[in-house]
Image (cartoon, rainbow, N blue to C red; front, side, top):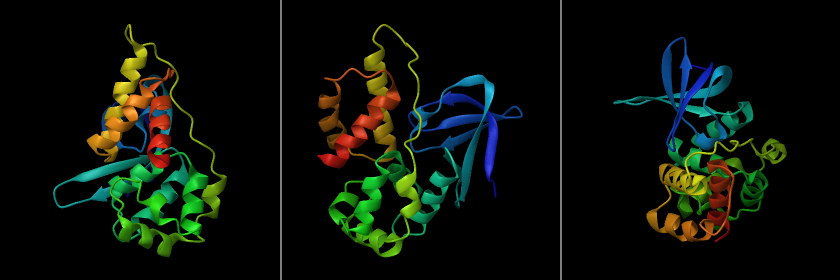
Length: 203
């Protein structure tokens, strides 16, 4: 079982990043790929979890051990798979998540893709009172402006909307927030994605 990969970030897509280690590119699924930047000179440590299925071996990546710890806690909840866990991790409102669990706010938890009422209740049952360390976790750093193309804001917005789809949000949910996001001026894909996740959780 892998603990982490240390290498260069060679590719960032709305669906995954590629960590190149010793000439081998590892496809790693992460909550928000745009927290990472392509950098062919500086090594980055990415904590990973390896999931083995009948027809695939997948790697899920995390910014730090705290994020990986939360992922593993979520996986232990019946009804939560890796994709749903990543969608929950993508939302940076950690205090909101902790409060929702501790105060049994099932409606808040069902706003995450792939989380129905029964699963939300199971999250509360399994994790209530066990998330205090997460409340102290700072928001993860984001991507700096890359200045792509003549309309960078549209490029960033399109990437952010694609990332929402990769996390499991429906076309209707994405369309609803895209209209609001199009009226804003963000400096990176990461900023658009963070804003979109906040809108989805409060609408």
